[in-house]
Image (cartoon, rainbow, N blue to C red):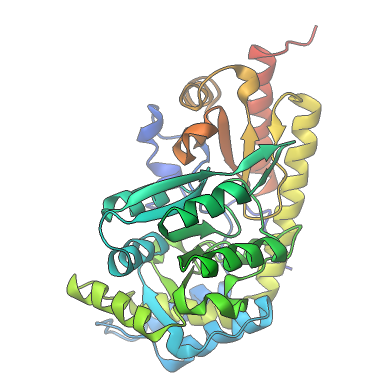
Amino acid sequence: MYDFDKVTDRKNTSSIKWNFQHAFGQPDGLLPFWIADTDFATLPEITDAIQKRCEHPIIGYSAPLPSVYTAIQSWWERRHNWKPEKEWMLQSFGVVTGIYFTLDALVAKGGKVLIFTPVYDPFFAAVNNSGHTLIDCPLNYQDNRYTIDWERFETELKNGAEAAVICNPHNPVGRVWSYEEIDKIVYLCAKYNVYLLSDEIHADFGLTRRYTTVGRFLKTHDKLVIYTAISKSFNMAGLGSSCMIVPNEKIRNKIIEAYDSRWMFGPCDLAYTAIEAAYTYGDKWMDEQCDYLEKNAEYVKEYLAEYAPQIKVTEHEGTFLMWLNMRCFEKSSNELTEILAKEYGIALGDGSHYGSQADGFMRLNIGCPMATLKSGLEQIAKMYADHIYSPK
């Protein structure tokens, strides 16, 4: 058994989450539930492997050994019922970087790129900063649950969208798209000859629903890129590594050319070492982490239902990020962020960053020991008592 209850002090590290909170307008020291890394000590075999690699006195320019590809391939086959070919894999610094360079390589400047919103906010930057036209396709929100607006999605594809960037499992709303939903996304993208770029960085966090990778659907392989990483699964975001899976050789070569033309090489040798260790030894650790997160999510739901019932918890199927409808306060997400930080000492993710229709929502990172989560929820309950309901 791994100890996910253990509180690890990160205040003397370069942690953005704990030590660089200036965006909240308060001195460092807020209890953080915002940026998407967890407070769980990573798999011991990863740190052991990195320490062993550091015994060698040279860390130079690096390329992955064949064993790295084998580890990635084996993990996906064991965990997700799909075995990507080794030659499909491209290593990169990060998922957002990968999306940027993919769009740069495949879609002409000004071309339309569709995203489902609310969504991970760097998607907006990846599309806009690569010189493309962003097409916002809002998800339907009803009864604390998000679904795809299929009619609008097909209309936008029919009207000239050249690429669709999806997030599965979806950050921030916590949906794990069903097999049937993924099948329909794939069908429509193939029907209208649209590139499908699938951010599957949270693939290992299908909690109450089993995750389905787009890679299992052959009909989209000619225009498909999947983005993965160990950063979320094993809390290794600081290493800056990810893997793109690109079945089509022509697309793969275009992406490689886009990287090479900017002299974007990497990741580093320590990242490759971590990837191999994570995907070789991480099954039990990952299973226990997901069990712990599922209990955390249930606790959030039960606690808020009792102490802050007008805060609505979006149905949570996956990721370690929960999506809270806090419109009962009748304040913007920016105002909620300021109040939570200034008056209650906690930092949550500002919902408006994920799409204009999400104002009044907040993102809560539950990837932390239960004791930390309880402290944060107590502060939310105090805010609720002060602003919504004061017990007699």
